[in-house]
Image (cartoon, rainbow, N blue to C red; front, side, top):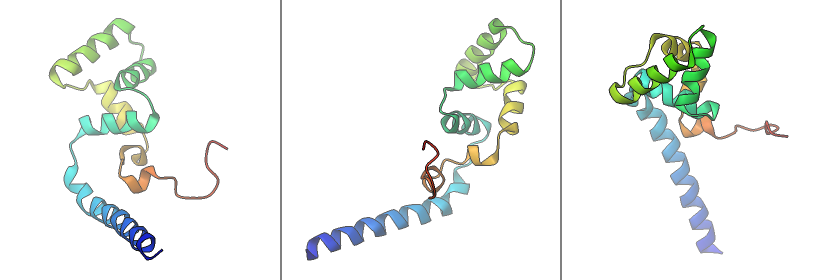
Length: 112
């Protein structure tokens, strides 16, 4: 019984320290719009390619241009302006992937 209590306390201490350190060090990990692109894709539950298609859907672009821009992004890392604008239009919370933001914070779960 005593061992189980010690284990639970250590697990809770580990979780609390991880959240505290992550919040403290998160501003140091800013990696720019490329990181924001992957964060928005993660929070939306889709791929970066799907984000390119959604961003291109707002503008009257052909699918060939969107595919070409995505291939250019994969080869060079250059994000087109219309995708940058789409990322900036997303809420800031969608760009924050810290564990404390990902864990549901209480109340009724959204899937019920």
